[in-house]
Figure 1 (cartoon, rainbow, N blue to C red):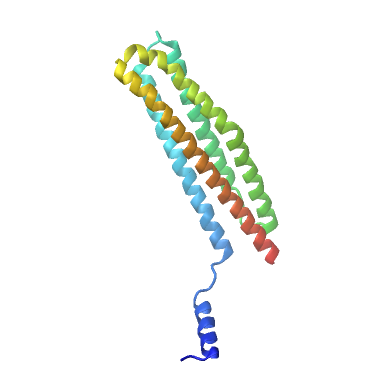
Figure 2 (cartoon, rainbow, N blue to C red; figure 1 turned 180 degrees about the horizontal axis):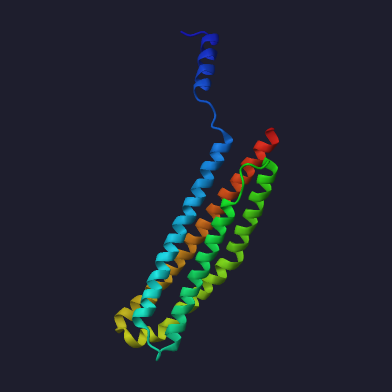
Amino acid sequence: MKTFEQLSQSWQQQEASHPEQDPTSALKTRVQYIMQKKRVTQIVLAVALTVLVAYLVWTFNADHPSFILGLMLMILCLAIRILMEWRSVRRFSQVQWGLSLEAHHQQMISYHRHRLRIHQWYTPILLSLYWMGFVMLIPTLHRYLSDFWFQYTWISSIPIAVFLVGWIAYQIRRELQMINSIAQDVLKVIQEQ
């Protein structure tokens, strides 16, 4: 049976063999994760935009201005959102690591406020306009689709919209928590110094 001193020594050796991760590298890992998520978001939005533009070109008919206007509204909403994400990625990549931790912390807080403004104001407006664009498509779809496909399209759009709004809200909450966590970790490192 081991003595207390032997247990204490083995515990200290175990702690020494697992050094704590450098806080700066942990922060950089989280930052890379956020950047990767933003790139995926941009790709998904770009694919959706490409599909809508192709559909607009394929189905363009000047006899149905509400249909064209609805598709263009949907396309515009996606294009604005892509532009906002692109600018956000650019702003996030401009957060400098070589600055003092206090300056870095202030940049993270500024970025967090920027993303909060996007998510609280612009995202709901763009989602509403996107949905209005879809609703503008309904009369033309009703005219040209069979009754079954029209009902299927209309009824299935509601749970899909509810799911997407819930998923977007969840992703927004996760992103803001991650950004806030990074800012808090930088603040802890500042306080430890």
